[in-house]
Length: 125
Image (tube, rainbow, N blue to C red):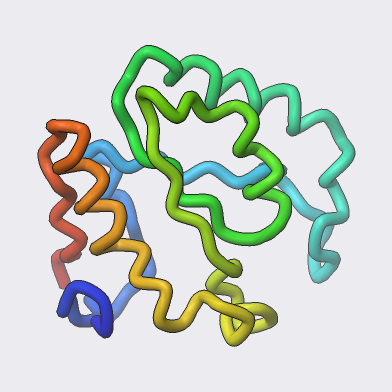
């Protein structure tokens, strides 16, 4: 809301974003319950790196939230891609730089710069 004026939809389902071209991808796709980063060295890095490499020919913006995501910046081609980076929005780290980072408006500005339609970040109730 503070960034692009979009209110909370009353749920946490982000599936609408996928239909608008948003791919949400964590560095590791599983975790042991209540143990953050417990599967960070379980082989997911190979898969997520391959997903990022598969986007090499597309103009896109990578939003890298947190240190594990920011370590993926070497996979991003600065001629075809843009990066928006900040602390992760998790309650454990958001105070370290996520608040005020304006990731959604910065993403849209980069998309327009790349000649790509900006994202409508609103979600249906």
